[in-house]
Amino acid sequence: MKLPARPAGVLFDMDGVLTDNNAFHRQAWVEVAAELLELRLSEHDLDTKVDGGRNPEIIERLTGRVPDAALALRFHDAKEGRYRDLARGALREVRGLSAYLDALQARGLPYALVTSADRVNVDFGMEALGFGHRFKTRVLGEDVSRGKPHPEPFLLGAARLGLDPAQCLAHEDAVNGVRSAAGAGCTVVALRTTAPEEALLAAGATLTAPDFTGWAAWLA
Image 1 (cartoon, rainbow, N blue to C red):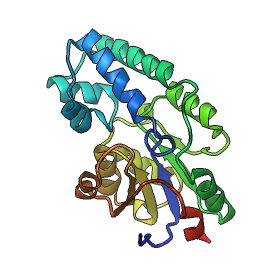
Image 2 (image 1 turned 90 degrees about the vertical axis):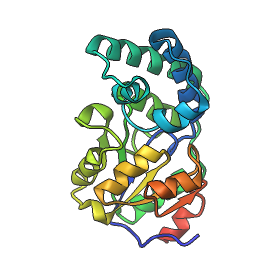
Image 3 (image 1 turned 90 degrees about the horizontal axis):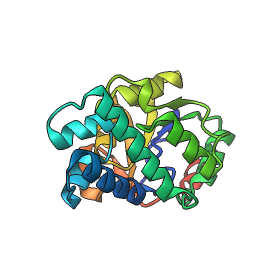
């Protein structure tokens, strides 16, 4: 695998990038969409409409209409609560990640979290992975007015590092996340934890990888 030129900073999505937790999110979507939206989600729905973005935007993709504030909040609380129930005690970091983060820090290369998740889920994930001290710079779902696939999350992530997006490497796993990062001008290396390689490349990824094994050596 030919890796890109060394960046000035790195932007990481959380779900599917720091931890391979997509199965828990998908199961929560299936259960709560059936209960609150009366939708029976297919694998195609999960593959093409659910991954990447904030919950109200995903509901709009699924139903064709923007949910009112009460439904959006009720759904969000139920779905994310169910996700945490399913994932509790089961989250593990993606292979090679800690060594990669250590190498970034040792070389003075800044990195940030750019996720659609809310603060509760981010805190849950950071605690489970032991990464609370790692990601001081964060962009969460509530920090932006337009979620992925819009470029705003990654534009803000680069800005919070004091960098131009073109100087940044972004790691994503979902098609809409890749579109967001590529649309912001980042070089995107996508992980194949959620979507197939061909879909990630078509969305704008420069290349794909199964995990972060070997990435620390790339920075050496």
